[in-house]
Length: 446
View 1 (cartoon, one colour):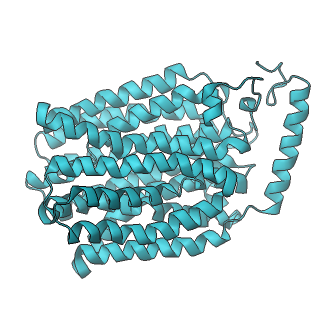
View 2 (cartoon, rainbow, N blue to C red):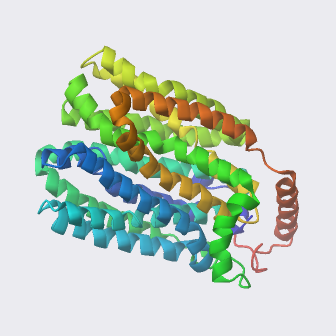
View 3 (cartoon, rainbow, N blue to C red):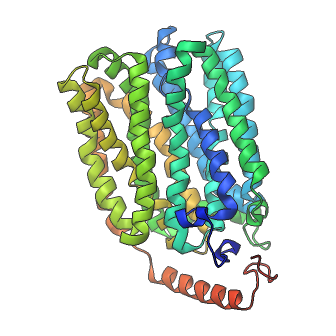
């Protein structure tokens, strides 16, 4: 419960949509940032392969990048506890910008795999600090009743950029300005989005240390790891979150070749298909978050997410394979896939309720799972493609989603967490009745 709980008598349009009003510009900036980050998503792999890099080297590049993303995703939680989410976001923006320049100048333009590997890996530390730092900010500044909707809007903005609008942007700019200039344009979008989010968002909790002053640095970082065994439900949620988008990152490696060389689409058609898939994803990100506030977070994740994705992954492969060149059918299959992956969004609203006293630590575990998916997906391609090819990989992911469905049965909110939430709600209600800011005892802002 936070200052954001102190709502005016007439909620703003943003609040009616489920967006915490003080964080509105943060969502706008996040969308722009992730558009820039997603520009390369649909064509970096084929670009590198067309310039002499083997598919195995590309998969390894994405895997190592994913390891860096995974580490940074976890760090976003304890660093936000230590320094405040806003400072963590500034650091993420700086890292992304600097190493994107190195990646393009010393790696891609001179075709140096070694420099690409170093710079791309280090750049992977950037976007999770920015994006998941903002997610921690949302959790710290949003009342529980709005968390599902706020999480939905976060993932709406996140996947709206990566790779939905990013890929769509690339599909139009590549024929006009070329592939290399399109790479460079992503830098401008990222910087613009970062500045919008950080300069126009003034919610006070984001600029302050979230952890109590008496908690040491060691305690903050250890707490973000120890929570995995102190509250095993966070570990289960982390595994489910890893499975969620692992297929997405694997598909960014293997599906460009499948759709252009087997199904018969052009590169532009593939990028447009990818945009359609993730347009579906961002719309259902929002819908699943709002449904979770009404139907229950775990229900939406287990049925629409896990069981739905177990079906949609093979559909996304077999339907285009059976109907070569039919863009409409491929798009319908992709929309189904994107919708089911989106149904995992309520995890971001569920986990803070499982650990209401350690929201940043709990979300760092979820961030670790989200980051892990960026390397687990490509790693599955690297390890198993020689087994039964693309078809075998498809069924591996289908099985993983079914397994995730079983794991969600364990993700109920503990009674002690419900008690804590009830007491916090009662305290906040009493403080609002006295016109006080619930954190600092100051007159509430209206």
